[in-house]
Image (cartoon, rainbow, N blue to C red; front, side, top):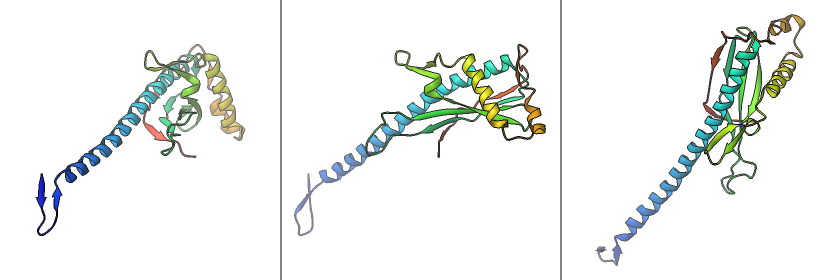
Amino acid sequence: MYIKKKGGKPVKKGKLSTLAAVVLIIIGIGGKQYMDKKAIEKDYQQGIGLIQKYVSNYLVENYEGIEKIEWQGVGVEWRNAKGYGPSLLGNYVNTRVNIFVSEDKYFSVRFTLTDETDYDNNLKKYVKASSLNSENIDFSIKSDLENATYDLKQSEKESFTKLEKSIFGSDNAKIIYNLEIYELNY
């Protein structure tokens, strides 16, 4: 269909529809990228949730002297470059837990998604890796506690001495899970 301009050449009405179609395609591509990112974030939350539950249960059942276990969310370093696509290394995803031995005394331990879980393509979800085990958790607790208390005065270190591996556990420990996604910044 043509529309005649006053004293000019006819203009196609199709140009407006072409422009509208191009705008819709651009919005569709942007929407797909957004939805893909949200699906990836959901997978990350599922995998980190697995780590948080396993580690929390292990700590409560095997360590005495824990007052609170507070998870710090899901940290993601997006390694995908806009011009080049996804990184061969993938995104870096971790979670950190603060283990409180008193109301204001704690130390932190970090767990990474790729070290503690494997993605099962058949199940389409993350599963616990063999590296997420009691020996590795014990090692992380010991080394991160030593690092956190290294520069403290002896009097400050004493509040951490009540944390010990024990069959009695810490049944009264408060656990705060957190699966909120945040971007890692260095």
